[in-house]
Image 1 (cartoon, rainbow, N blue to C red):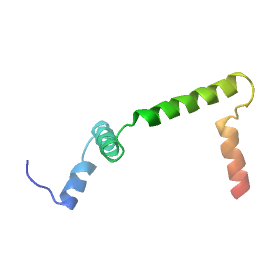
Image 2 (image 1 turned 90 degrees about the vertical axis):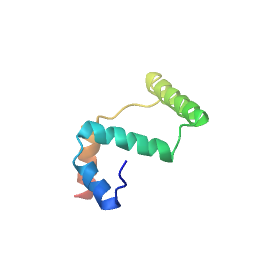
Image 3 (image 1 turned 60 degrees about the vertical axis):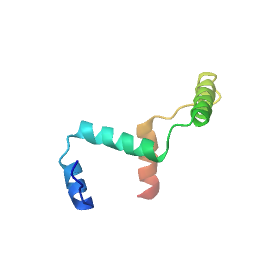
Image 4 (image 1 turned 135 degrees about the horizontal axis):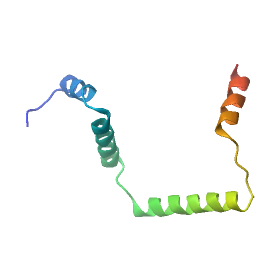
Length: 76
């Protein structure tokens, strides 16, 4: 493989189709933060906790459009 300097590499990335860019991003992120089974387990527990809170009625959901409308009003 021919070594690329940073500018050449970035130019090459710019010319890639979006699906290849997303694969590259995923691979780069995984190389920075490799999967950890314990972290995955903790996330699963958190997801289950939040789903249970929603299903039990402990929390109620707010429509995303309503959230963004309130944010716009607050910062207008």
